[in-house]
Amino acid sequence: MLEEAEEIGRRARRARLRLGMPQADLAAALGKSQGWVSKMENGQIELDRVGLLNLVAAELHVHPNDLIGRPYNSSPIENQWQVAASSILRELRRYDLAPVFNGTPRPASQLWGETTRLHRLRDAAANVAIMKVLPDLFREARALAEVSTGHEREEAFAIYAVCCKFAHTSAHALGHPELVAMSCERAAWSARLSGDSVMPAVADWMRVWDMWATADWEDAIALSDKAIHSVQQGYEQGEPLAVRAWGSLQLRAAVSAARGKRKAEAKDRIKHAKAAAGRLGEYTGPPVYDRHSLTFSPGNVQIHAISVALEMGEQVEALSINRRTSPGLIAALPNSRQGHHHMDLARAWLWDGNRDKALKELESAERIAPQLIRNHPIARSTLRSIVYAERAATREKLRRMSDRFHLDG
Image (cartoon, rainbow, N blue to C red; front, top):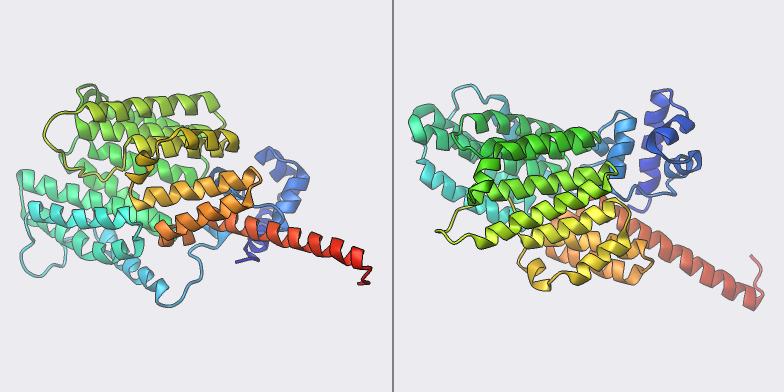
């Protein structure tokens, strides 16, 4: 892992040379100096923001995973998730064919019960376990759609769409771009057939995430607004599922704006999301099942505000927001979000010059959501930076002591 930055730099250089692009041209496209590009290609500069990583990849016309080498090499046991991913791809490819299913599929009410298990696994950032559950659930939901009519058929397609969302999230976390793309396409298809007025907006929420990989910040904002408009009426009427989707899309737009250097808009979007979270808190009706699996709450808004500040290089602001955030809001979040939050704080403390606190936050992130953090390029980048800095500091201490001892060589 310690040589990973150098390998990332070599991949970037090879991609640039394949395009016949001079370093100066890449530097101009990135808004950086030629010296910065040279250091990045030599592994001396970390791509320590997702937006920056995606922008470099986009300018080099490669997928970000091609630069960072994800999926990362793991043990044979840890790589077993790719078998499940292949099974999911098979189900998604044959989406418009009669499913191969033995017996009678269970009713939609029971299949929705199966998705609650996926919610729990998602909250725990257990992406490998999600992959293993999905092939059978995809097959059964599709079989139910084939043999049912009316509302039951629409519910089957809604379940299929939600399964696509779980596949999409897990594929992003583990680094499987083909599954990311196909699950997003099938989510849009099944959402249209679901009879669920919010589900198409959820599919667009997924598409926005995919647009980040190609640094299409403006398109990501435009798509977010399109989806927001589609649920606007439900939001204004206070429908909880529409409010969740509306708020989640504002957070997507906030991150897109931050990466596109639209600072004022990014902050405005965070304010809109806070308003949506407040509306959720005002809801007094019967409990609503979060069938779309959108993690949206005041705590989630706060950790997005911190992420947005970091995307704009404002670690002091990120740490200030964290100090003003109630620990209870963070504690109420699922492990997947808490892990991401502590990873962001590690980055903030590192940029602020406090490696001890950075390492402590990174350790917290790994303890809470190990699978997520070990597979996240920014967590790996943060750890490498800490290790390199510690090595450099140790070498300097030894050099000074050697000088005092008048040691040669």
